[in-house]
Image 1 (cartoon, rainbow, N blue to C red):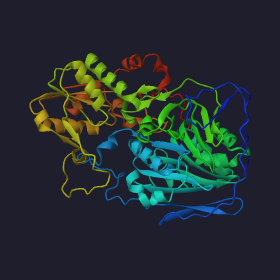
Image 2: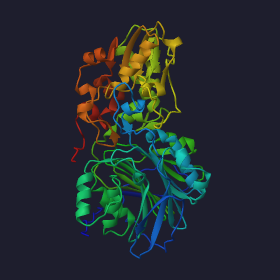
Image 3: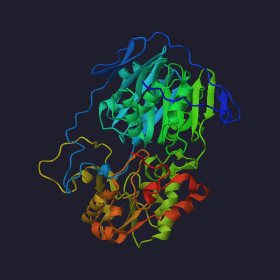
Image 4: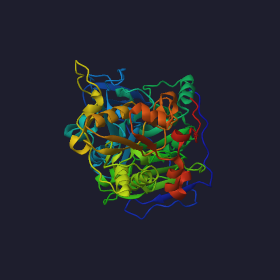
Length: 546
C-alpha cells in the first residue's frame, strides 16, 4: 500500500498539558512539546458482546476483535419510497436533517452509562442509529444498532460496556446509506493498536480520498465518509497517534467535529472553519467530557469549560489534557442553522444561547413583517421560541394551535384508503378551539420543498382559521449544504422555483414573509462574519469537490 507523506509539526504550534483534576478554563500557550509515543499495544482479547451481525478487523499480529450489533429495524413503510402529494410519509422529511451527535468521556467509571444519557440529550441530532464504544483493560468494546438510543441500549447492553473511557454517536445519514454497517462509532485495528471514531459533519473531498485509498489497496466496509479517516490513520507512517490524526486531518476538506478513542486516550478534533459545534466540560470527579451541544453536558452534570477551537486537537490521557493547534486559522464559518433549527433551545452554541437567538429572530419578524392577527402559533417544536418572540413583540397572545405527537416514528401502517395529508396529520393536530374564526400568524423555522407547509396551511384552515399568515425564522433556502446537513438538491428547493408571492399563492396563505439576511446578520452583531450562510447565498466557504 502506498504511503501517504507524513506531516511536519513546526515549533509555532500551540501545545499545553493540563492535569485532569478540575481546573479553570483551558488556554493555549505558544510553546512546543512533542507528543508522547504510544506504547506498544498489549495482547488483544477477542470479545463477544451480543448476538446477530458481526465483523472482524485483522491486525498485523493476526489477532482480531469482533464487533456485534443489534439487528436493523424492519420498516413496515419504507422511508425512501415515493408517495403522491396527498399522503406524506413523515412531517420531518420536509426539514433539513442534522447529521449526527457525538460524545466522549474520559475518567469516569460509569462512562458508558453517562455516554448513553448524553446521547439521549443529543437524540434530536440523529434518530437512525446509535452506538457506544467503551475501553476496559485495553480492549475496545462496542455496541451499535439501528433506531433510537433507548431502542439500541438497555441495562444488559450497558453491562457489557464497562470502563472509564467511552465515545458515543447518534446518526442521521448524510454520506452513506441507512444501513447497520454505517452506524458509528467505527472501530478498527492497525499496526500499533486499535481506534474508535465518531464523526459529526461531512467531507467535501470524500470521493477523491476514497478513490485514492482504494487505488492504493484499501478495502472499505461501509459507504460512510467517516471510514476514510480510519484508513488515513492506518496508512500514516507516524508512530504517535496524535501525529497520525494530524496527518489524516490535513487531507480532509469540509466539516468535521470528531472524537476518537484508543486503549488509553480520548481525542477531540474540530475542523479549521468550525462548521459543527463541539464543546468540552468536566464532571465534579474530574472526568473530561466532549459533546456536540451543552445540553448533553447539563444532563450528565458536567460543567461547561469551553468550545473546542476550530483547527484544534485535544488529547486526554493519564497525563492530563494536551491542546494542540495544527492548522492556520481561517475565518470561522459556523453553521447558522444550528441556531435556527438543529440545536436544542437550552444549548449554548458558538458562544450564543440558542433560545435567545430564536427569540430575537421572532421579535425581528414581528417588527419587519407585522400582520393583523388574533393569535400567534408555532409549527412545533423548532418554531416555538421564535413564535414566542413574535408574540411578545407584537403584543398578541401565543397559544398552542398545533399539537405535535412525539410518539409517531418513521414506522407505521399506511391506511388502505388514502387520507389526505396523512403523514402531517400523524405528527401535527390542529386545536380548533384556538383557531376557529381567528386570524392566525404561524411561525416556522424554514421552508424547504414547500409541500409540508402547504399541508399545514390546509389543516389550519380546515380547523376554522379565518386568515393564515406565515412567518419564517430564516431567509429563503436556495443552496444545498455540503457540510453535514441532509438537504435536497438545489433544484428541489421551492425558493429556487418560486418568488415569495408565488409561494404565498400556491400555499393558500394570506401573507408570507421570511427573515431578511441583512437583519439576521445585524442581530448577530460582531459575530456575523463567523457564520456560514451558504444555504441562503450559495457562497460556499469550502468549495464542494465531489
